[in-house]
Image (cartoon, rainbow, N blue to C red; front, side, top):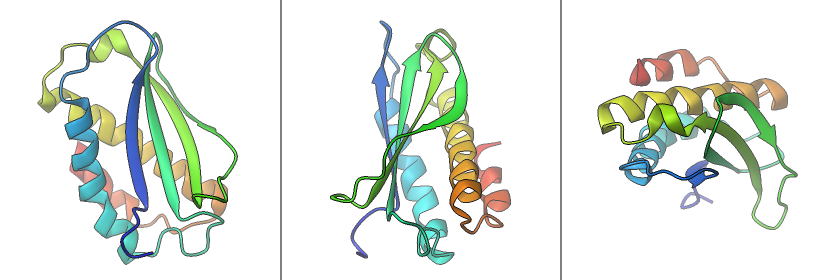
Length: 130
C-alpha cells in the first residue's frame, strides 16, 4: 500500500462560484501532510487506509465532519465539510491555503479522536497553516 495515499482532498461547488487554484492548493496540502501521516502510521490501526476529504463550497461554514460509510472496496473513509463560497470566492492562494489547511487539520483531529488514532503530531502540523 505504499503507493496509496493516506489523505486525498477534493472540492465540489454546491453554489455558483469559482474558487481559483483550489485543486492545486488541495494537492499541496496532501503532499505536505502525507509524510507526517506515514511517519506516525496514522491509519495503521484504523478500519480504513485512506481518508477522502471533500470540501464542499456552499453557503455556510460547517467544519463538523460529515462521515459516510467506510468503503471496503477502496479501503477509504469518506468525510465532508462545508466552507462558505462567499468567503473564499476569488480569493488568492495566500488566503485559501490556510483556510483549506486549517479545515483539513480539524478533520484529521476529528478522525483521530473518533478512531483512536495518533494525534500528537497534529500540533506541529497545525503550524503549517497559521
